[in-house]
Image (cartoon, rainbow, N blue to C red):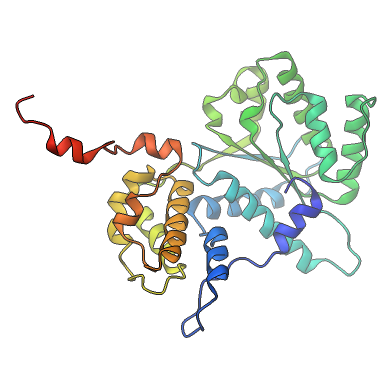
Length: 328
């Protein structure tokens, strides 16, 4: 995904499609592959990000003097930050493709991961790698930067997505240089920058003078866990219902998963990534064991990611607990 060719393939790939009413049953392997990929539900975070990115791209279109306003998507792990980032990037890429004239080879979107222990040179190298800009070990950071700024501007990059921004640590000398490099890039490349990272506001990214500069230019989108209830709505139950409608199981009873919303919220702590994994894995197991339906018993037998399992209390040996002598 961190090269233009890979991102373009992702953007143009046909999204997984749920079965249609009256459609002939799909082959087993096709259904397994479908649940492995599964659909992407338009969550509130994706909707908010898409709307704000569109607005900021228009706002910064004719800005020349200073860096354009930016966005930061923050939240705990497994809450859908990268998914939101990629879906907005995909939408922007496809919108550009539909409007482009024949022969237009411009690059509307760049997607870059901040490398662990990022330095100015390694971060510049990641930007160069995305567009296939040739670099050598002997090149200085300034030389790579000049090539990156020239090529990104010439390619017409309008949206730059930077993931794993929490890896940037301005408290270290190398991290401070990387943060300064990124600030310089935002002022030299005429694009809208969107960052995503784990709990960015609590990380080193927002600390010190450099953090204040970033915070002063970026709006924050909180991609946190979905609450069980928000006013009169039940966003987590609505998400479960949308995921259930996309299942391709022959014997699953519609409405059975939303009824388990309190249990599923407790299992996943409201984290979208954990919920999606749980339902996808349960669907695959339901196909493999020929039950073709998801039940609470099946869900309870699936081990989730460590964060979710730490949150959810599960007795290690319920049978032993039941037979323990009452006098002890």
